[in-house]
Amino acid sequence: MSGRRLATLMVIALVLGSLPLASSPQAEAGWPARNQIQKDGFTVTIVVPVDIRGLGGRTFRNARTGERRSGERVAEMWEQGAEEIWNLGFSNHTFRGCYTFVLDIQMQALGEGDSGNPNNHQVQFKNTLFVAPNVRARVTTPGGRPAAHADVDTAFEQSLAGLWGRNDNLITAHEVGHLLGLADDYTTARGSDGVVSFTPLSGRAGTLMARGTIVDEELVKRVGELVADHEELPPCILGVWESRQMKEEGIQTTTATVSAVVRVVPTDQGQLEGTVQGEFQLEGVAEEGGCQFNYSAGMVVDLELSVEGEDDGPYSFDAKAPNELDEIQRHYLCEQAIDLTLDWDVSFNFDGIEFTDGQYIDDQGEDGRLVLTYLLAEQ
Ligand SMILES: [Zn+2]
Image (tube, rainbow, N blue to C red; front, side, top):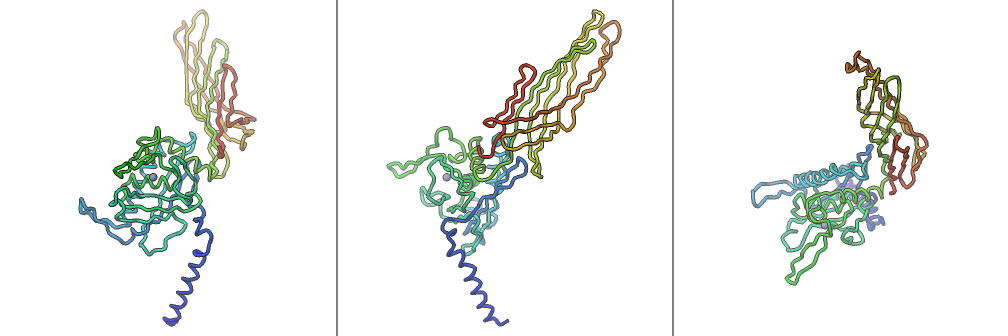
């Protein structure tokens, strides 16, 4: 193929390639589905892809230390630094008591002319950004800057645009907060001297979206609401089971108590499986021939459940196998040694559980109680 023909073909390919971008209405409205959500049981990974134009192929020198860094390395450090700040908060606070978020930022350093991926958030890097007073890094949402504390889930539907400078990790983490759809938790006012002052919203001082450092429970909850608005989260059933039973047998009067946490987890195959984990305690009195003594025993309860049901129910919970306490205790407190047989099965079986307002409460009086909360994705 001649050089001339090749060049012609390339021009055609470039024109064809750019046509859909220029004419697509999506180019105006933004691009579909930007932040991605990956679910693995109760672990929900939020992938935030960011193209940073103007970083790639450059070298930056730290004026203080003289250290040199490539733009690619800067992007990598921002990515790691912001992930660390967010993932610390996510590991400290589950969402709705069930879900643990993991943030996976994918930053890509691009040269000024690189096309990048229009599906990613588009950030322009400007080295001199912080030189001008009051000029800060920002992320803009189509439709304008959201009001303080008014989160929007646009970031899960369209790519957002940003302008970043020499961010430190906290600034980057704050800006990534905007890429997650969070609004600022502060208000600004310009004083007569032209200096802008920042006031955290009530109760938000010290937290990341109020220019602080902490990803607190409220931020995790707000990110969770944005995620849940956009993606159905797996069913989440959590609760407690407390039960007490008395048994009289031979010379023994025994009271058994179970105190356990019920948790239902979706499997990879989309089925529901659960666990019941807690403690089983026996307390008893034995009496023979005017001789009376106490005894006790206990064990850890760790039951596996099979679970059936969906939405508000009915659900059935069934222990796959009981946990067994089976021991013989020899007691020497009376004239003759007495062997006590302690033989209990702990099992769990509930049928026809229906949730009202996401709650199931089965109150069996003083013998036991089952309280389950079922969280719907739409809540
Ligand atoms: Zn902000």
